[in-house]
Structure formats: structure tokens, C-alpha cells
Image (cartoon, rainbow, N blue to C red; front, side):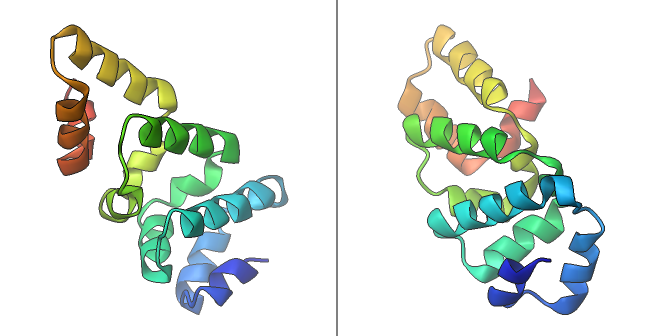
Length: 129
């Protein structure tokens, strides 16, 4: 069922834990999300950290994740693989949450590049608002 994870070298025990969160309804999205992680240069160990560290990622739709990633890259966040590896729960955010945070900071007069640096260094700062 989770052949992509086997191909990435993820351990059987981790795959068994992940399978508890997967069903036929979300398997296709999950596989597309794994491909997306590969496309943003996540190594197999990063993907393992992301999936094991945030099992709720398996409940997210591909559209939600791709919208989040597209927005983040559009504002200049480029090391998403490192961010998601370190903060896998960031993937529980929706695009609008990041947009709202960025717009709030822009309205405060903070430059976009400074906002991007802040998010790059401490992504979960948006939870403090």
C-alpha cells in the first residue's frame, strides 16, 4: 500500500505506524504529497521525519499542501525541505494562515524579506499571534 515509503528506505515499523492513518480515501493524496516532498528536495530521512513527526499530514489533501508550498515559494521561502524536516507540524497550516500573517506584518511596516527571514528562522512564530 505504501510502496513509495518502502522505495525511500523508510523502516517497516514506521510504515506500519503510518498505515494506521491511511485509508483508500486519502492514499492517492498521500502518494502525491510524498512525490511533492521529493520534488522539493526532501531526502528519504527528511520524508521519514516529516511523516513520522506529523502523522496528521496523511489527513491533508494534496491541494492544501501544494497551495501552501506554492504560496511559501512565491514569497521567497526556498528551503522548505529543511523547514518541514525541522518543523513537520508547519504542514498543518493552511495557505491563508501564512498569508494572513504576512499581510499583518506588511501592514505593520515590516519588509517582506524580513518576514521571510523570520519565517525561515522560526516558522512556528505565526502560532504566537
